[in-house]
Length: 267
Length: 255
Image (cartoon, each protein chain N blue to C red):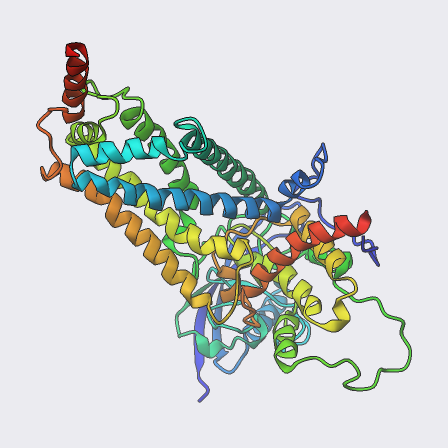
């Protein structure tokens, strides 16, 4: 370690040493820059999921059977090596861990910054900070709450009396045909795009991916990803409201399953 | 062309570190547009002294933008409205007749107000003390060009070395992070051959000292805009990368 040349008397630190020093590499997470790394890496993982999830959901436009087949394909992933749904669950657990670390690092870094910062009673001007960067601590919790609703609505079926397990087309069209739910999806996915716009750019800085020749591309990438996710995700509530995605309350998958069960009885 | 303008100043007055502060309004009439911002405050102070009042306390030294002693929050902007300029080099021609100007000290928990517009910036000295130097045996000056440095490297290191340590980056940061100051001081030495011996120890020690006193960077980019030396936030990214490398290398070296 570097030996300090002088002992400077300073104001009291805003951040105290951790009470328990964890073993290396976990000790990296106990530092602020280490937490920024974790936030950047988990953000990249979550962003990758969001983009793939949006693209996968475009199967809705092919029809009820096609999106059902897509969902089954996800469950079948890796079945040549692992029992069915295992690979999907491994990815889900990875996402849950990434999500938890993303929230925890954001929470503890925000607390540190709030302790370090003092307000300007005379007001202050923002020159570089944009709407997205200044609302990260708002868009984050909005996305978190929305995610809970989204899972409860379309995965667990708590809020949807007509929920049919395994028929995404039916569930999406039943759920998003309600105007308040469609508005909720539009607001939350706009918040998600705003979060991605700052997060994508910020990720490069936090992870130290910086090369002056290519730096201008980082903003384009952030705007491009935010725009693609925004357009894709907003299309679902809008097209359900417009009646493009609509099965008139009929679950094709349910009928297929009953038909299959009936056929099974015959044989 | 010189002209005279009349201004209304709203200045933060605070008798001491533990006293309550408040804004006091002063009329600054007949200020030459050729005066610097600090000369304007000197004129106001002379008038205050003549009227038997306490002058406004503010810090300044070289008044040519190279020492980093001055620094005021002017109308909510660190070092005022002119980009790449320290408060002392900001001139009154940047303002118009009848303007209202709000003047505040830098604000951060680790920059406690000493009096009026002067703040205690010793937390930044602690960061320098943790590793902002190179250790060499002194003696006769080494021959010029004894250690070759590529032109691009020298230029980039010099961009970082331009940091005058004024604290505007902390003042402008919505998180009161000192990332730009620390990154400039770390990278100035980390980029050069002379700084390599202590590179990883320096990076770890300076970043961790910074974290004890200041907030966490959220990449707003306000510091870059406020910096009187226009130091880019690229140095912050490079320091983040060096820090993680340091965490690995220092452990390896420590065995």
